[in-house]
Length: 328
Picture 1: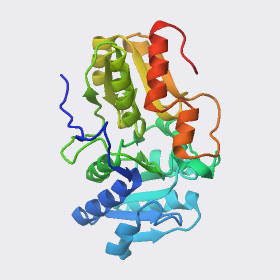
Picture 2: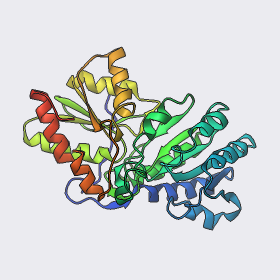
Picture 3: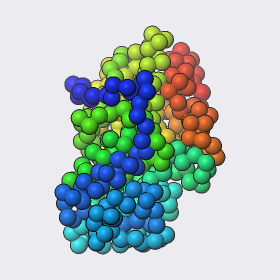
Picture 4: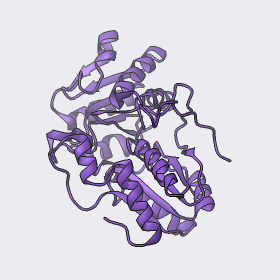
């Protein structure tokens, strides 16, 4: 059964743009207003990661740890053990990029309900270059036992995601983008942890996307439709736990999978879906993302175009794949 998911009316004609991290900031404030156990800790990036909204409203529930990401999660784990619901934030290049071992030993091993917010993840960091374009985070966090991994598709969903995480505390990695991206969902759109959503029904191929790439998948589906190819778009905001039932159901309808993510194709969403299909329902899989290389300096749109992660380029590669070898 396909769950209804309302799309913004202007999704493909002129969508509103907003950074996903802005929705996180609003959601965190709303969660803190609903539950006094919610606290925030930051590594000297309060305004950039949008924890500033909570800090202004609840200064006694905010801790500035400074540029010390390892200490950031260790302190948060202690607060969680004392009954709080801590959200920690930094750039994803530094958390989980710099403190993965501390996340593992102080948060995940102890099953503490700490939320690791990795902001500025993916190519959309743009001109800050490869050192700040965290592309490996989905892979390294997905393999960590007890850890949930969630990548909202737009700012409205990020707001819903953040409230849902606070209402269901557990070790969680929340992946946020830096640059403004299109809003395709609505305030009435559903979100439940562990659920994937079919945004467009099809019969020829399933475009399975997460985070900022879901919008590009919607564009790709429209372009493929112009070629007579009906693509189903499956939005996967929760990468772990993966909604295996919904993905397999989509593949029963289409028989082919294309995974799309703004990160390394190895080990990320592409790896998760590949593991699923090989064990439960073998079908051809094409993974779109970064292939064994780092990013580089450039504008966000330029980088997506170069690495063939825009809707137009994805549509070209999928159409080619359906009839022959696709580009990597």
